[in-house]
Length: 394
Ligand SMILES: NC(=O)c1ccc[n+]([C@@H]2O[C@H](COP(=O)([O-])OP(=O)(O)OC[C@H]3O[C@@H](n4cnc5c(N)ncnc54)[C@H](OP(=O)(O)O)[C@@H]3O)[C@@H](O)[C@H]2O)c1
Image 1: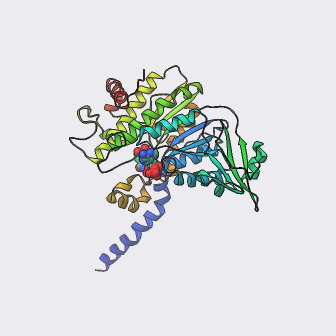
Image 2: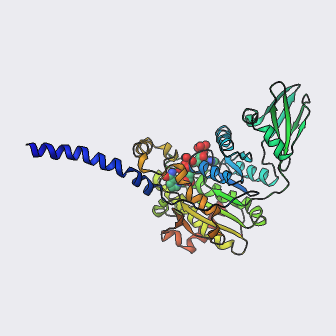
Image 3: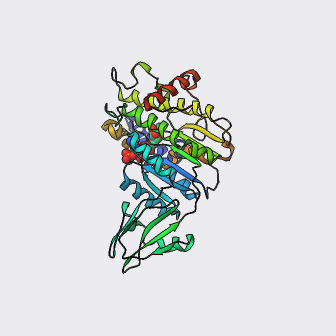
């Protein structure tokens, strides 16, 4: 009886104690690969989709820390500006900008690309009337304390207040608000003339959505995760080529192993499973990257895809079960910052300068499913994607 009691007590004390002692090692194992590159990105321009939260936001934070001009491309401007504000404050890099992009709407994707290529990467600011000054996206709420410092650094000049006019942003200039405590003033910052794009990170994604369609009638996973990024890349590619060396990073997933390209029912109208739909779209990311890399040989633009790991983010928000599971087991999941490591690695690592068409996980090459390595499939799917989007991409 006593023996039994000692054993039970031993188990109840020893197991939790052992787990407690091993916890830091378990965490380190789960955290996975770390990007060790110390590359600086001053003068480089980066676009990251879905960077208002999760892995994308942490990727943006890291690249901003390295000095890049980071364009957060997201569908919710308020969320995007909150993320940008946080990153600007933490990194001291004021060139973190938010631009509207809804990947579930090809009109929005075209508008984003048009604005970007026209050099309109800054939010539009408006001098309303008299002394009242307002900026779209509430820049006045975010800049007041940092602006004088930026003006000194960047040599911006002030614009007289009291005018009633609209001042759209110029190429790399932006009208911003300055509150000096008494009356609001406006200032124009000049960020230089170059119109380049060095790193495009196709990160945004949806998972486990109930059956729904994008504005253009595409099944939501296929439309947002694959076709939206396919079109965005197509529209920005010339700029990437002109800015070479440049990199395209497509955030896929281990889930691509479960994916199939179901040409007979791409929109899932005959048969739909929300989990499989996500897997199909992630396989689409891998195939797109493979074919894109092949077509970009010799241009100085590389394309790689990756699995970020299993990350505690809001990706599972459409499923109550998934949200509960991720909350319960969050200890065993990567944090978004850990999940961003492979994206950052693909974007900056010096040793990947001319590496293209590869798939990474934990900052090293990883195993691709047989479907994901099928070049014929990649070519055929490329053509079908072009047809769906009504574009000609030779
Ligand atoms: N988390 C994981 O375990 C995991 C594993 C493997 C792969 N991934 C991949 O990692 C990427 C990032 O996911 P995450 O985990 O960081 O998820 P997340 O926190 O949910 O972030 C997803 C981002 O995509 C954006 N987005 C969704 N639909 C959009 C649309 N129509 N237009 C523009 N942006 C849109 C979201 O914007 P809103 O905030 O406005 O919704 C959000 O910013 C995804 O491609 C995902 O497939 C994640």
